[in-house]
Image (cartoon, rainbow, N blue to C red; front, top):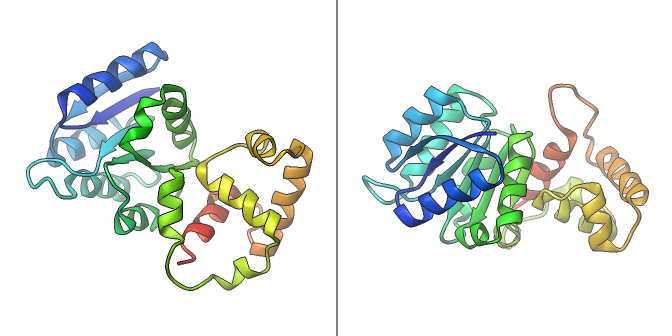
Length: 215
């Protein structure tokens, strides 16, 4: 994959570059400020990018703003956001366009190499990769989405793991069920949520967005 890494901390940035190279991926550009990030994303249009939320010049949400601006220019541009802490507003802004190809992980996730690279690859393919802590935070407040009320406890469990970006096989292993059983649960779940098989939208992504935006 062709990757842009936007991170102002040298050690973390250099570590990610070396890690991604070890997995056979190419970092085509790096950025250390918000404006540099936007320029790099629009110039290179990478297969996926890794973007820190807080970057110079303000050290507030420059990285996120750059990622959102780039996705407005290039709809669906895959972006994996890294954050030191869970910020509900940032996560919701990232999910707002409903396009998929997004991830939101805590920086500590980078230290699990396989997990981090797997998340990047899922986002690059148009899926989602959400840190369990982010999901919990998003669901901790607000009212329930009525469409979700019709799901069984097992379907809720499947959808929660789907939100993390797990495949049917991985969800089955986590819930001690066969892959075919998970496939049946997801089909029923899509029907209950009114998510049709649409060439323009990934049904898994649409289900995850419905789940995460319930609050």
